[in-house]
Each structure stands twice: as structure tokens, then as C-alpha cells.
Image (tube, rainbow, N blue to C red):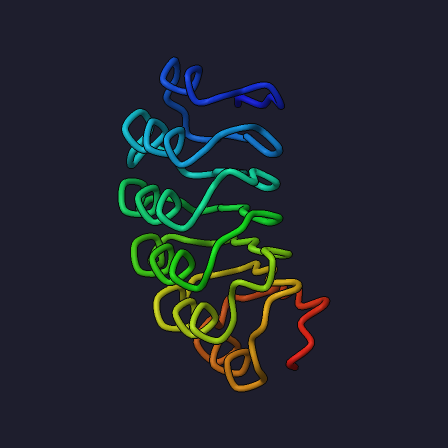
Length: 158
């Protein structure tokens, strides 16, 4: 378990782990590339919440390189539906918990529908502040039969 607010891209290559808590750190897309190379398929749990330098492209490359992710927290980051769609496609069969709350309203129906299609084993999902509509959430509920916790606070289209 590695956690710090001072971690930056240059330090990430010093380790490879199964669980990384980098919440609030200065990690960027370049750092995510290093994590991808260092951890790859062994990475199961990643917390990037509040990492404001992380963008769509970095999240997409990370998802492609780390398909074994079971838990991912990317709350309070800035990204769009594209990132969630790629995460769903790449990590979907194993993904159990996902938090993409308060992302600046960059996500909506496309993200929710991608999760419904690819992430049928989800047990916990937080998408507070995003823009899914009722039908997207219904699709999630029907497809993700193991979903036990759904957080939708601030989703004003439902």
C-alpha cells in the first residue's frame, strides 16, 4: 500500500503494486503511463480521486494496460464519457467498484450505458454529479444484478 500527497511522476517507477492510493497527488497522464508499465495486470485497486492533472487519454491508456482492475476511484478528476467507455471495455469483466463522482459533468448516458454493457459484475457505483438519464440508470440496474450500492447525488437529469 502506497499513499502520499507528495508523490509525483518521477517517483512512480520505483514500485509496482496491487493497490495504489494516490488521491490528491500530482500524478499526471505521464505518471499513469509509468503505473501502467510498472503494475500492468497486477494492479487491482487504484485511487486517483482528486488528481486534477489526469485526463481522458491517460485514463484510457491505463485501462488498456491494467485490465485486472477491480476497484477504481477517479472522483473529482476531469474527464469525459470516453474515459469511462474505455475503462468499461477494458476492465469491465473484473471491475467491482467504480467511483467517478463530481467529474465536472463530463459524463452522461454514454458512460452509464457502457458500464451496463461491459461491467455486469459491478457491486458499487458512484456517479454523483454526472448527467445520466432515467433510462441509462434502468439499463444499469437490469444489467448489473450484483450492484448493491449506487450513489447518484447531484444527478439532475434523473
